[in-house]
Image (cartoon, rainbow, N blue to C red; front, side, top):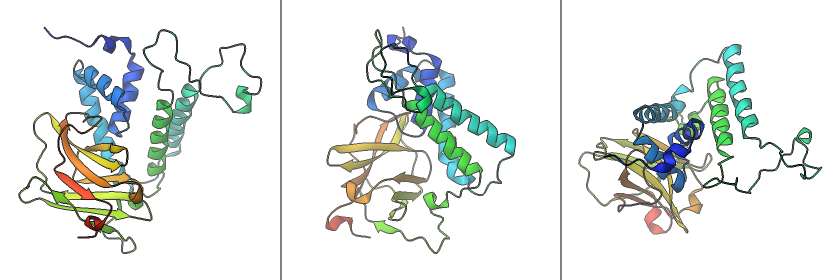
Amino acid sequence: MNIVDPTVNDRNDQYYEELLGAAAFGTLNGVEAVELDAYLQTSASARAELAELRMIAGGLSLLADEAPPSPDLRRRIEKVVMADAAWARPAQSSPTALPSTREEDGIVPLSTVPVPGSKRPTPLLRPWILAAAAALLLAVLAGVVLDRLVLDDNNPGSERESIAFNLTTPIPDLSAALTYDDDDQIFILETENMPPAPLDHVYQVWLIDESGPQPVGVMNQSRFVVPGERDAYQAFAITVEPAPLGSAGPTTEPFFVAPLTGDDAEAS
């Protein structure tokens, strides 16, 4: 008999739609990842939607050369962005609210008081993340070139620093290059002949700082791009983690490690 996590039924569809979008962009926290994983075990359609969203997220950079959108499409995307922003704005239900926080002033404080009866505060900032993603999509479709984020190899003006790395587990025929662009402050990992992750597992990428490993996404294609200040991190690493979302913290030893400080971080 299958045992379903009782918290799954306590959430509405909107909540899980938000988590699916956040998972596609790698912005879930540990608690949300556990909740979404439980939900995915009960919904084949949600698993399919997550796969589609990840394909879309991974393919945003490929849209740089697309034609500008029609005025109608632009209006529709802007409408989505504004609707998400309006939905995220908390209603002022308390008659004792401070008089200076009027909605017409455009300043509405976010409440940090948990809603009575809820298991934990509703993630009010999640719609802002989705709104930002929608705004990014609008910018791409409008012709804002994202080649500065994925750094076209044919661009002679782009300079990248090569970063040496170590493979703790030999991978036959693997060709990989980890570079960093200081102007855009992004790490770029490019691979060839990377074997698929083991069954029911994914490759998860981490940036390690003084507080420990920070999850930055799951590799689902040969090129992985992640923003970050190089000097803020000690290492770039990859581990094998449970599918489809990975883990809040590494559960295995990294098989790919690139030191970002000290002599070991010098270019290869």
